[in-house]
Image (cartoon, rainbow, N blue to C red; front, side, top):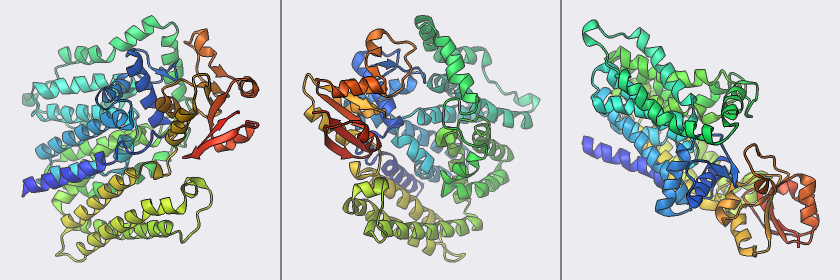
Length: 535
């Protein structure tokens, strides 16, 4: 029975993580940007200095680009190649949590954590778009689970090595912030749970710290030595300015995560408090550790002005572990929560049905641009799946003698199938991607035509055409560039002179900027972009 339960859980996790992973176009801006930087790295053979559209891009260390570029070696420069590393990282994340749950949580919790982690909206969003978030989350999860094993006295040399390697990889993924979350979680846990004198915790600091630094620092040292001014850029532009009001964009109020954090954990975040109480009955230190792990990231990232939803991704593995503990304990309060989730699914299914049938006309926005027929192909099956899952969950929690485990299975299956179906719809999804228009550009481009982007940066255009475009009216950092690269970055007036000149120009822009380009004709529209030529 446990084996069958594990197989079912891993099957649903595989659907949520892998189905349709390469079916949809690279999403602007982040997904396409990271994929294109890795493509340029893979194509050029320069694995040390990241470039975006041929321009040095030192916003992040290179580990995420290396992982992504390895995918191109397997599947080529395609969406599958770009996201192959993401699928592997997410699978490893689930595996780490499954192993931890088998060791420390109630019987049956390991099966639950596999499917709960894979169907958590924050994890799905991080895995389906190429960014640093998932890689950083995996590194921090490995570090924290290994740290608990070390504190608990159950760690061998492997866990100690994994702890320091993970910290080093976290630094090579996102710099100092990669260390802050694990260390703050341990700071919130270790002083309150000291081991006895006979149970001294052996961290292996004498060899572990040099090991972590050996992973974290060599690229930084080489890059700073090879690129004049890069150290000042790292310290001033990438660290200090993020702590100022809106220093790197994305400013939000301090209470931003009070609603964003629980929303991205639904529905499983509803079970986390019950899971902590269940964990405390078995092990108070474990409950404290998981609680600190879940709360430290949203508390810490509430302090800087710059905030994005997935900055707190590191907290969701702990949320999944707590929710899995709640389901394994099968408390009566869990039954009531799952029943509420079931009725919530029915409401969402009704809304999807209304949208899919066109009961309410779509006016403007990405959904309206899809057309009602395409909207129906996406939303009507989702409505059916969620309705079935919600009805099943409500039925299996109707009374005290019912089966909350089967209700949770209905909910998890509904989420996994919804994710797999939605992302397998490709360009029918209301996502901003340059794939359709870039493919048209590739058909239209001749050897003498100028490929350009106007007022809206799209890394996907270069990814799909394999050509570096001229940038018109798009501000870029040119601190480390030579004059040849600078020639491709034009102000608005200079670009309009090029547009009106004798050369054929094929430009990608957003529909709202089309009016700036006089004359010419539209070659393609869709998914948030318009492709225009000046002849």
